[in-house]
Length: 401
Image 1 (cartoon, one colour):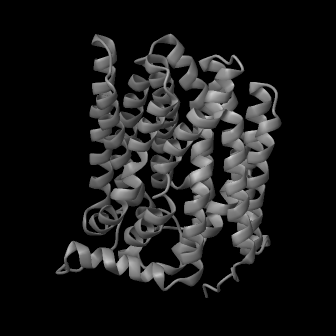
Image 2 (cartoon, rainbow, N blue to C red):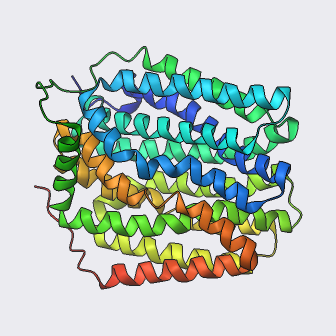
């Protein structure tokens, strides 16, 4: 039974949140270590893009069936299983690097399984959130989760560079330990993380169709997820572009981690402001304004002369992201019933995040063909086109009451 006590006094929410702080730092460490490892062993930005593609391919392939399964299964057990598999996968990478050399095939399989576990865990955690906090506190909880993500990026990116410099296997060993901590925290959460379930007679395909149908009937969310899908191509191509551009400026792995952490710092500040912005600004202003900020921010990166300046410019655009996410997710939570939470989330994520696997591939191909400057210009032009389309659409903010 949830109450309106402050979130920091909500034992079960804080257990989940704290465990995810640790594991998310671990994920950020690995997210930098994987491309650094591929670049160190092969020197190929294209192969680094292939690994990034494999890690995010589950977003396209698994979100729909995973959403239907999570709405059928025990959410706590789904999260426990996901963490356990990720510990085993990362242990295999550590073993390969310790005893010889991890092959590209091994890394592709490892990151694919890692990404698959992320899909299941994220859907189960998101669907469980209303059972841990009062519905009136959901925007604040969403902002606190966003701060968790961005704080992990702030700490994890530079830490990933430092750990990689110590030893190529070290970042992956630390990430494996972080998932073990997350798994342990889940064991101490007391509430059931779902409401009563009726006996399910539908097929999995029928369950998937129910989630897709619900999303299709929500005109506002339908338009937003398509815009996010286009935006994610740019935002998720940028990390590899920034790594390659910083390397061209002579940056060390540790300095690359530092410059990437600027985005985390800016987004933490944005997460603190997100609930206030959610209450005071029209949703249309937040959505369209964010898109134009990201378009301008990508173009500005071309003129940055040093790695730190590159990181500062990239970070400036990250500050608006939390408000964007809180606005969209708070509206979805307000409408979707509990038994559809994972499926409605998965339907939106399949479209919005289904483009993410393309991002590192696009970055790798463009970097190989036209270099980092040309790649940034292409990405900025594409982001500007997305912002223009959004400005021309009727995105009248819907009522939820």
